[in-house]
Length: 289
Image 1: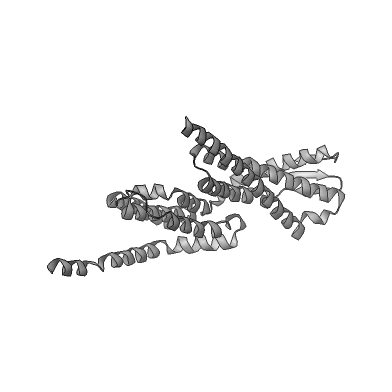
Image 2: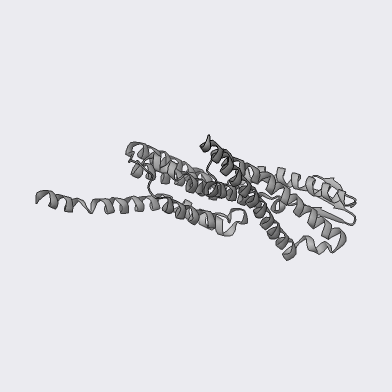
């Protein structure tokens, strides 16, 4: 009778602890959460986070508990403590990315505290997707965008030359007869590269079983994005030279970008299908041996 009563008295402790932990997390990381959501909504280069974040939550829920997972409170508390220190530093330096990274580290610490390191490894795909959804600092975006602009300009100019169009390449400016085509930061392909990298991680995690093929799909998404963006620059230059210079801007230019992203998605899907077939044959031969 005494044991039943004591168990009943202890039942509310878990929900109360969960509620207090959630309230403390929201109080500490409300600003990074709101700032991240606003960036997802307003910044086209970070808009993929609107899809990746809820998808990661759904995948984590679908994966469930890891076998033999056990709470590691000391490690979890240590991770949370480091996250709080980074959150304080981010507030002092007004650095949004550090605050967002601290928020992710605190979430990981809560998982380790509640279910252990095995659970975090079990949720490797949702964890990667959440990490990819976090907007990068402007300094990193700028350093990535400029080389991509030059690469897209080179590919586009080379393709235009094969069609007999007189082309002079000056940095990220493609000089055509009577018109200059500027490959701006928005046309660098960074947006499609980020989206295709996320798609490569998702396809590899859901459809492939071997780490080598998963890494290969993610790695191949980079040249696919660069190549397709070069084709976009070529298509824009071709329309400018032979149809109408106004087609290099506005709705038609945006539509062209979306159509070519669909093409890039299809290419990556075909590559993934090929990797699945290779895995089936490879793993099947290994099991027969």
